[in-house]
Length: 151
Image (cartoon, rainbow, N blue to C red; front, top):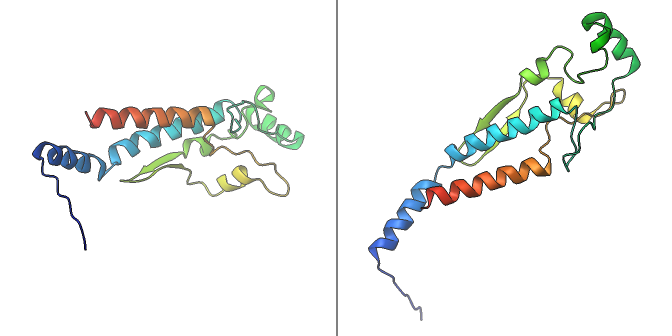
């Protein structure tokens, strides 16, 4: 035996329909989240690395051989800094992607993975990282967005 309880209320139906329409495609929210993620990654470059907690200056210094090469190209004042910005191409290649249910920041340069994960000869300098304080900011933004669209 099956018991079915039906609830007929036009106001509730209307609110449910509005909620469905708002949340069936989260592209507007995902677009904003992708931009917040990109800003977090840009902060990693500005701080020459941040860890999960948001602590700055976490990237390993450049090797003396790399500094010497950079000094010839950029001048002695820029031999050691900024790290990962020898030409600026990696930072400039950052772009966002979003859809109804995803947000991303990524790079199109092939050597980005070597900086992110490191190699046998080069330490990892993870630039595609969202530290906890930035992640909490994204969560806060998402919650505000949900409250705004469900009013």
